[in-house]
Length: 343
Image (cartoon, rainbow, N blue to C red; front, side, top):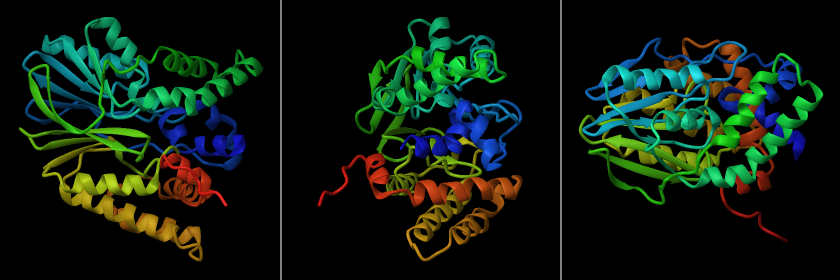
């Protein structure tokens, strides 16, 4: 189980949160990091909505996209990144616009989406955090295991090149505050004077994923329910993720902002959804070679990943087919919030 957990971390939790496990295992598996394509600068995606794109520098852990909603009483920040440099862009935006940050909405508990929460709270002590309750469970499960791995690595290499990053990860886990406003169900919220529809998906990318729809601009902020160049499947329930994408498709959005990657119109989202559904269908047929499923993703995602290195995409997707989509049934049912059948 420990070996499987560490192998899983080579992929999305390398790409979305885990530098430790990437270090030796990525080298051993010859899996280079995948840079995510995103806009180069802060972008006004609609009136009153600004994107601070996440970055994915070579050899570093990424930051997820941040979406800022300007409200009558201040700013609503969806996802706060991992690194101080990313969070500083959020704080700088607040200073430039002369508006306080009144609320944080976390799409899910991965560290590249919650890492800036304490820094923002230090600057705005009355900020309210809206999130599902999945972080608390993750702190007792996946993040507890990750913390022990980090601590063990630091004992072995306290002055290694990766040590500062490991300590930063430990600090994020330790400081991550729980939700002030726990999202238990989907519904309309009035936050800082702005009306938003907040939706909760259970057992999709994580045990609790939040996405936001702005009815005034028809912008949908999807969190990691949409990620490029591949879906990050380590902590995911595949069938729950498919169900969540179907929910997104029923929403009348004009523009969707993913958790990683550039904003997309409905046609591009439909391409992503079709590629995802086909990927799951392929992986569910044991007789189909894993390479056929990978080829299918590369073909179906098409222009969505045209700017990415196809060999890097292939290697990451090959891992996911083998270790996530075709994982042991007991591992999948656990991520889907159910217990394996006995007998």
